[in-house]
Length: 292
Ligand SMILES: *[C@@H]1O[C@H](CO)[C@@H](O)[C@H](O)[C@H]1NC(C)=O
Ligand SMILES: *[C@@H]1O[C@H](CO)[C@@H](O)[C@H](O)[C@H]1NC(C)=O
Ligand SMILES: *[C@@H]1O[C@H](CO)[C@@H](O)[C@H](O)[C@H]1NC(C)=O
Ligand SMILES: *[C@@H]1O[C@H](CO)[C@@H](O)[C@H](O)[C@H]1NC(C)=O
Ligand SMILES: *[C@@H]1O[C@H](CO)[C@@H](O)[C@H](O)[C@H]1NC(C)=O
Ligand SMILES: *[C@@H]1O[C@H](CO)[C@@H](O)[C@H](O)[C@H]1NC(C)=O
Ligand SMILES: *[C@@H]1O[C@H](CO)[C@@H](O)[C@H](O)[C@H]1NC(C)=O
Ligand SMILES: *[C@@H]1O[C@H](CO)[C@@H](O)[C@H](O)[C@H]1NC(C)=O
Image (cartoon, rainbow, N blue to C red):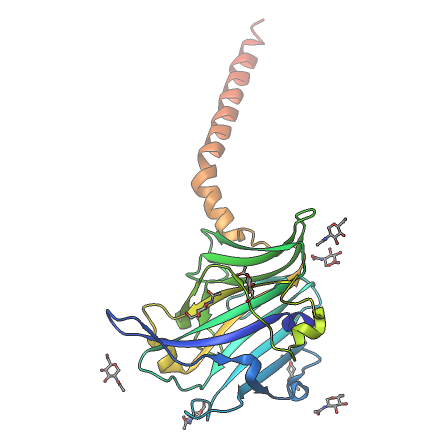
């Protein structure tokens, strides 16, 4: 729960008219939202909680039937999530799901982007890593995993991470066809002055803004297929937030056996060939023996 406080978020909405510049609507600054009491949504068995909010003022009425939410899931042990994107997790990590539900788009073909900012103490550097895999068994059609990793400059040990697959989903019970393209911008050093009442300031003290570094990254949803949200009015993006090394996907047994067939068979054939040869030689040799 505390970890969520270390990140600041803003939601951008823009339209991309053909051949024209992107048109940005006023930003939804989540620090200016009013949030529901978490009490009602706390589930002690599933270890989940949901923060759901609407802007303090909503002149356009976009939120009359919608909200922005963060669903947090804590884990007691390592494992793999059942719902897509089926992230691999450890006991030291939690899932944060960003949910945009029922919010009316302000334009025709609106897209959304989430700006995530992190605050780090001195001596800790952030790095954005992208890993591609040939294996999409756990997250069909998605081959890219991104991680924002905070490393100590002293001993280059990993302090914390935010890890996500390059996809969002347009459904409460996501299937592969509900896939919404998700793109990540570059990591930017943000020179922000944090609001005086900010919870970040409460956590880090007054040093924020001078000695502490704030970095931010934009994650945008919906590429060419920007109409998915327009149609479904639902968007969910999941990321894993944790301490220590981010978990790494290993190849699934299916892919390992496919690779074994594709790459390993000539080796197996050589081995079999070698055995047969050896056996044949032994046999011939032994056939000679009685003669001696
Ligand atoms: C939340 O739950 C705690 C303990 O369960 C209780 O003391 C507190 O009054 C509740 N707050 C609200 C706003 O319901
Ligand atoms: C808590 O989560 C479990 C498992 O998902 C579910 O069966 C249960 O109904 C939930 N409890 C509440 C109060 O929502
Ligand atoms: C409000 O949302 C519900 C469920 O998401 C939907 O069934 C209903 O039509 C929406 N109402 C309006 C006025 O958009
Ligand atoms: C979880 O964190 C503790 C303390 O930081 C560490 O000792 C442990 O190895 C971590 N476990 C995993 C699975 O990363
Ligand atoms: C939205 O765009 C589509 C295709 O460009 C167009 O047919 C439709 O009339 C537009 N709707 C509005 C409300 O502008
Ligand atoms: C780096 O090492 C110095 C001296 O050992 C220590 O004071 C400082 O806290 C360390 N910084 C981090 C980020 O671990
Ligand atoms: C950050 O902002 C302060 C004051 O606005 C300025 O003095 C400083 O040079 C800026 N730093 C960077 C890295 O842009
Ligand atoms: C995210 O996008 C918005 C709108 O284009 C821009 O103002 C902001 O600087 C971007 N932030 C980062 C970290 O790139």
